[in-house]
Image 1 (tube, one colour):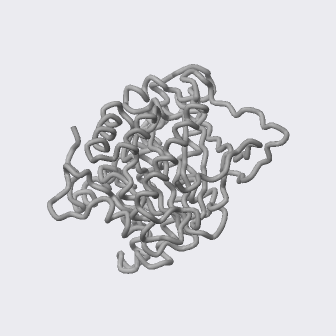
Image 2: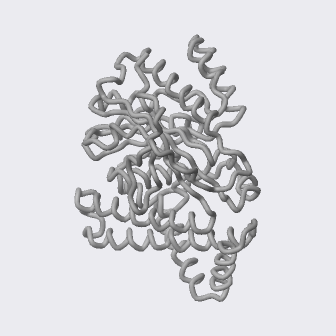
Length: 381
């Protein structure tokens, strides 16, 4: 069951102040001290200790959310009570706020949940140039959108434009911050009001005027992979007479057929953009709350891989674009099969081979390695 998203005025007048009030009440209580001590114990002592970890992270997230809300309120005041909030200077200030707050959040996640993020076989060509990019990632588990936004902001000095589900606006910090930045909250077709713009149109508008530092982040699968969704996508392709794409989708074991409308609309509006496809493992089994509870403490290594495609290698004819997108998704699926992290694997970073040079690293970023057998870009088909 999905709760209906309340109107914006309810989210601003009730939800956002409510988070701040809860945070203010939480700080002076003895409960916070107990949670802090239990959190420190959970970090020092091996083992699950699920309850202290969950209590600490929940308390920290409430405080983090409240800090974002208060900082955003300060920017709203400074912008003339919102009159100038969408001007370039304040837009950049909001990106800086997002960067700093995500850095704090991931520091805490790594500390409490023992979570490592490792980027390997990095084909960073397009990302490290002054070319606008469209980043298309698989969607698996909680937090992958946070990880990618953090990576674009902190590691690659990009200003991301992101496509997200509208239900994420239940979180006041996300609601306030991303509604001031270039972002699109997409409503599922079944819940969409009559006459409302579809997801593809919204993504196309978001891709307009992509600049050299911009990166549009999209998850073409539209949600976590489930057997029901995977089979429904295959059947929909087959019913539409797209048997070749359906056959490709049937070969995908870890991902499901991507929705092509959004990413292809973005490429239509931003032909100057390169494309980066992103695969990752480590969060695949975390779909439900029960999954997260079972896996705590995470003690996980999230492994990420990217393939970049320069603008002049992106196909422009629609049928060729769809085949190219599905071929890229098959490549992601194959990489996941080869790099899937075992359920019981501890979070650790393997030694780097002598001939695997470090391509990119910062004090806050994971090590990014280029393996000697790294393959090239996905060729257009």
